[in-house]
Amino acid sequence: MSQTVNCAVECINGCILGEDCPNKEYAAQASEFLQTVSIDKMHEIAEAARLKKMMEPPKWVIPDDI
Image (cartoon, rainbow, N blue to C red; front, side, top):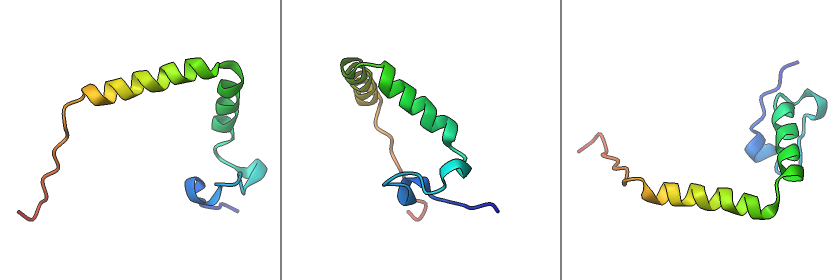
């Protein structure tokens, strides 16, 4: 039985598929990251990403119906 689940919506309080979850490997990677990386390092990573985003030029969206 194959189930389609929108994890971002339906698994907010935890995975609803358990062992059948197709994203188990990502959960393990995330758990390992949280256990091995300090909160200070996580803040550094987030700040670097924020600064990179701020340095990007604006992205213009032009509607098709002009």
